[in-house]
Image 1: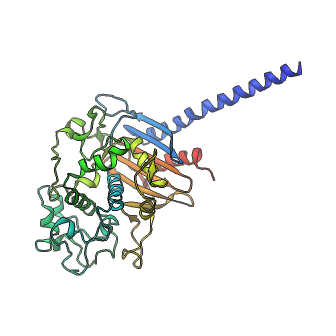
Image 2 (image 1 turned 120 degrees about the vertical axis):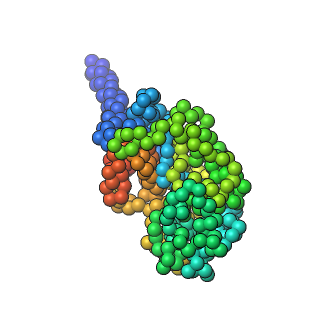
Image 3 (image 1 turned 90 degrees about the horizontal axis):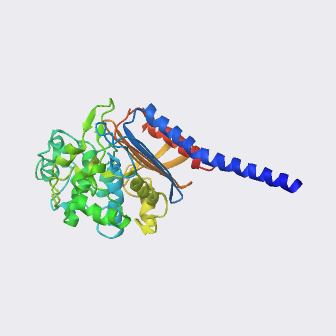
Length: 387
């Protein structure tokens, strides 16, 4: 009798444990969905990785309001300024392979002398561009789509108006889309390929990632998400995006905006790049970066070690952020444009990676980071960050 009673009790305990385990994930789903709902997201994705493995994925809402096609793991989202971080990973891979030198004068790559005319003895380098310390000015020349890069930064032309007057390159931090775009032009000059095609072959293909800096190069365009403004109105439909021309050839004088914020990528794939950045530079057995390159992307600046002001929180387009998780430093990037939100952050101590992507939501910030990302990060920390 006692044995039967003990067996029955054990069965009840096992059933209770199974029920609790089954209930745990739907509860997290509900909490994640509430964050998306509270921020009025049209569509979104939240992916979490831990110690090199994807441990949680949640897809919410629709790709486009008119079609009502649901967001799934196949949906491509625009990465906005997280494009810069991904470009930084590609640039560091090129540095690993000896294709670029972070401290070389970019004049050597572009084929003309790039200088702030007031500091002729100070070369502009990739390290400066990717730490946002090159002193670029985003004026009316940068705003015109017809502008030619060499006309703006060649010291023999009109370079003066495109550099900050009293700022020696490397000595002051000012976030610069222009500088990030120039990195793309350097990549095109060195490789002889347009930057999107090069990155598809060089960085994405070895990982089985279908991503591109222009939607026309994606393999499954039916899964491109429309983008929306923060009030919920349409910003850009996939049909409009696909009509925009992109010439798949090296045009460094014209492609200086490509690497600013145009990347289209699936959330799971962006998270996988985060895994490489969070760990030893590998993901799914494929080496993306050397361990030295990963550490270099996390390194703080100093005038003594690399000639860059310590005021810059970015190293090779990777930010150091200390307010997302209490007492812990994360690395990554945030991207926003109209209602688009994209965040990729990694916390190496716990091995946690979080990827947040939306095609339109409320864009309220809290201490520099989007509220939607802070709320989702809190959930991930509670579930997966072990003290």
